[in-house]
Length: 293
Image (cartoon, rainbow, N blue to C red; front, side, top):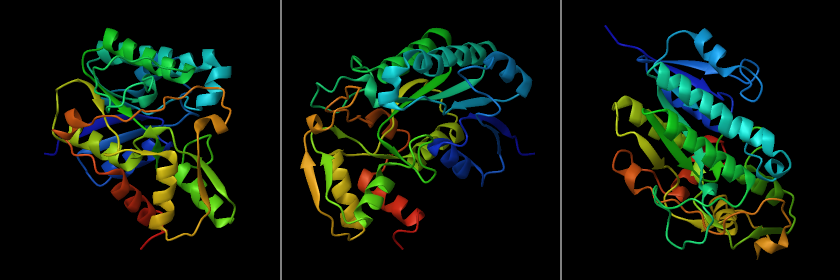
C-alpha cells in the first residue's frame, strides 16, 4: 500500500506556492494541503491554533513572505511580524510536533560587498528591513527547530507572478518592450535570476529522496547577470528589437538599499539536486507562458 506524505503548503497562491502544487500534483504519494491567506494570515492570526486545527501532516513548506522591499522600510513591524515572528511560531510548532520545515528566504541577507558568489556560511549583513527581517526568521528556525531546510533564493520569476507586485521582472520587461519605449535598466546590481519552478523541483527532490542533511541551502539559478543583462537576454530570446539602456542603480531613488552583488553559490545544493542555468530556466519559462514554442 502506498504511503502518503501530507505536505502543508503555506502561501499556496504565490509564485513559488503555485509551482510547488504543479510539481507535486502528479505524484499520488503526496497530499498537498493548500493554505491561502484568507485561511491563515500569518501577520494577525494565531498560527499555533491554526496548525493544530489542520490535523496530522508530515512536512510544512512555508512560502509566506512580506517581500515588497521598499514598502518594508515603511512598515518594519509588519515585516518582522510576517518574516520573523510568524516563522518563530511555525518553527516552535514544527519542533514540538516533529514536522520537517522547509522555509524560503533571500539573497538580500548579504551586503553585496563580496565579489565571489556567497556560500551558506558567509557572514550575513543585510542592508534593509526586508533582509534583516528574513535573517531574523532564519535565526528563529535555527534556535527553535532541528529538522529544517532553509532555502535562500534570488530574483524570482514564475508563471503566477509575485503577489502584490503585479507580475514579475520578465513580464514587466515584455510589457514595456511591446510599448516601444526606451527602457532603462540597472546594470550594476548583479544577482542570479531564479525560476520558481526550479525551486519547487529542488524541494521535491529533497522530500522524494528523504534528505536529512538539515540546514541552509542556496537555491538560485546557476550563473549571474545584472538586471540589464537579464532584460537583454529576455529580449534576445524573444527576438524583440528594444531600445535598452544600461544605467547605474543611483539613477533610481529607492527607499531600501540593495546589495550590488548577491549571487549565491549553489554547490551544496547541487550535490543533491542540480540547479539549471538561469538562461535555460528563462527559456523554459517563456515556453511555459506561450511566448516561445
